[in-house]
Image (cartoon, rainbow, N blue to C red):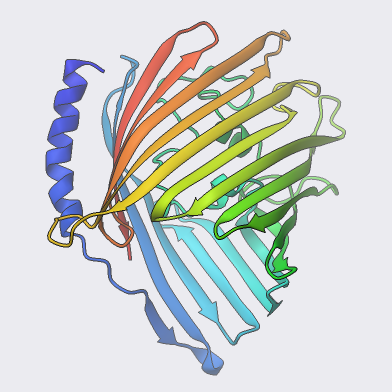
Length: 355
């Protein structure tokens, strides 16, 4: 990191840390609504500052997220959610939820497809600032663009984005087994379908110990191939998790492989990631209530249009300081190395506000 970057980062920390330390979480506001139902209103705002390594990309302040969430409940069986991006006026989640039992729950509408739990985890829980390991100014990963990483492939290929459709999930066998199945348009967020095909995905999980889980997932996406015919695109993966959010050590390991249909009909890809966090409460007299160091290693490889192998490695050390509840400030340093051993980096600071 350059001397310029260190000066900018130090100045930014000096400004944002007092702001984050002063943040006081407020309880979500619940209101009475029609027919005896209740509505809970919440929001999150995440302000970010990035110093990218590439000289062509300037350092930037911006609002990373400004989301409003409205959860409604008619009774124990019927509920729903509306979540939208206040910046872009984009609907993220909007669904009717039916919960007849713990073993079977149904959502109809638009939701996060989330084949991997890494993308399903709320951004208000995850102190990792950018799941795809992005480095502004770098766009060299064939098909999905940006850096080659696990998060970039699963999200860029539509495996972990928001889509309209139907979702079934539940836990059974004394909560030892769980499942999540989706059937969606396959066209991405808030988009109408363009053919009769549907994208299907499923995840089966086995829960062990107090906070352990191992999952297998698969997806069969539909898209238009080079001959303008519907193409079925497979992806498969495994995932293991140990620990929970904001409670001591927490590890998440992911691996996936499949077809990179954004390059051509036959290109393949593989991706792997390991992430570790350790939530440590601080003494009550401290300005912050907890600190959470984190480390992420993410690798991905694919083919380009000439059939050449292209891969990249992202290494992310970071730390999160919690002011109260989910409010706090996180700093990440993303190092990215290509198959040609070219290295770039991006330093990010993000203030988390959740209420």
